[in-house]
Image (cartoon, rainbow, N blue to C red; front, side, top):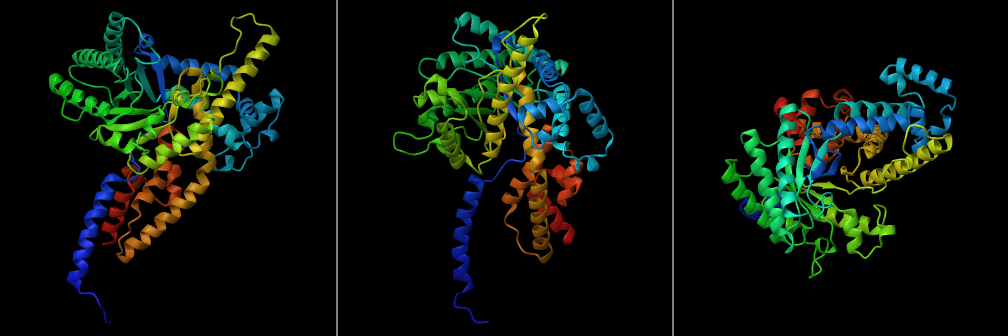
Length: 478
């Protein structure tokens, strides 16, 4: 076979291209396989206790059982698929529930009521087991501007409660604090609270942080605010005997200037780079962002078009970087207007209608976020937790069959590539497909066994890395 190019010429060109390719891959490594919580609950630092997350789960479960005592009630309130076919009489609901209880998981999937039944029971199990996945002890909007002495005392008290929760095992799997922003007016207060909280916490725990601890820096608009946080982390780590790089942070997208700067550029990547690898997530602040767009309070909702614009700009800027993205919160609480034990029938009905309306709004907001690739959001009240999981479980379960087909096909392509000795360079795409199942598994939507339908083994799934799966298959083939 005759060729025009010399090997030495080709090598020089491709080596030069390789340098650029590797640099790109380092900047955009793809989605992280690490567990991402499906939500973050924000609560005022003044109210935080060691058992706050446990109590929130109890309140959330009670709210669900009060306003949806069975899966049919929830399906009808949220208009799940096939909800029109569900019975209305209590005896018929009980009979259907008993029938579904007795079926095997495979046989149950053939029933029209399977999805509604499964979502409801998974919600109940989740609220009993791990109602809160991520909690942020809030010294910003959830706490407000208070006298310095009061915030100092609260920082000490909250740190001691976190330490107590670590000892008792009552903290959420992910936890952190949100300090005040590094604006010119509040930077001193933000630094002082961070110092007091971390110094107290580490003194109480003998130098240990909770698992998955993170510091949220809100209202970031310029890279210098992130750089300042990094330098502070370095000082705090040195002063408290922490290994360099231990402290991690998050930023917030809640001002138009973080979407587009004065030169008409999206500054998000520069802001993330300024964290020097310490920033792991970017959260959207729905109400501050809509306010910065001049939207009046009445129309400041997650469904406003300006939010979708900001979401897509954030995705475009940070897609493939491994930075977790989180949507904001629904500000309508599913709490009935009437309180007390001796309510009239009309008051009970009004409570139920009010709660169901709020449920639908939160459910649709979360579903919209999931469809747009935001797998995490904010919750502000324990009564919102059932709808977080209702939307999440419905999303994953209703998409399961299509996702199985896509990943199974992809795995088969990878297997062919492996056996023929070719280099399979779509590991990032495979990781994205695998992450759907990892996210579903982490939140309790599916089990490990249900991932096996993709053609992966349990051992392969547990690596959480499509690249490592390919490496393992190549090794076996060799």
